[in-house]
Image: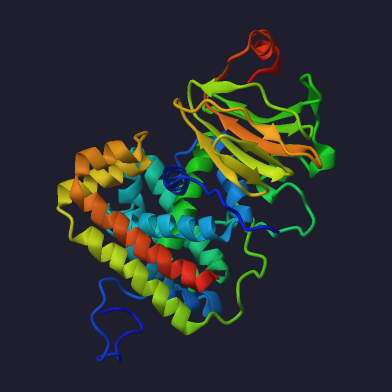
Length: 190
Length: 213
């Protein structure tokens, strides 16, 4: 059962739970039970994601713990109008991994001039969540072997065209999903 | 400010989002995204792809007691949010690499009034700031590897078009070009390369070891 979605029987079933209310509970009430749910879902996925992309299990475990600690202490930095919770956690894991490898901070773009909004527009957050869900669903429909290949390729030193040569058409499908998500994101940000 | 006409190629954005771009090129991407909302949105879409990959990754059980260990853990480094500075010439990621804005750049003259300053160098390539006086042509050159240029001030033109603040030109093995800085003021560029450039003329070739590009 998606947390916070129990009463919305009219809305179509979504592929992934809505984690934004869980993040809000962590941010506003330091809700340890809510954090435990977030942890149970994401920590094993971060660990699996890092192992699939070439990390040693011990390194992946430590990095996953570090990322989850940031979620616990910095929940106020999450903005549901900008990224899904999975995407936000992905960017934290990616940065921790790079900083660990290089022992330097990765160059990050400047923030948007207007900064995070105190009260994110629920419609914007919903549209963004739907775009993210569409991506995840497209990914879920891929055969396991191809998904694993994309996962490996995502972190390995291979060009996009080499990946396309190995995965064939489905990556094109995913790219068109990215473009759809992009169009939506662009509409929201301008 | 004129709208940005030349954007980052998709593969650079994808590699940056995945976190596998060498630092000199990551610096160009971060600097351009700081100036360009279109590429900021494209980057967000690429990161959404990463989020979807994480969501569908095969879960691997955490060590016993990991949840308690996390709750007891110190806050750790915050995700980075870099506030923009109105009026700065160099975008924040570049100011970090330089140690300040334009006044902090330690220039080295390389001839014909051209100045350069290396801001990042390593096995993955190098990134340098280049200041080209108005009307001066960069020596005609081809590329062994990849070259990505971001204009920060002034403008230049070559056979491919005109490039002003925020514009990106990505060159590969096939491009031979002779950028000429426009009249008005010096043209300031950030250039990332993964292999030395190949100059056509004899004099530039003799100078190449000293310029280092």
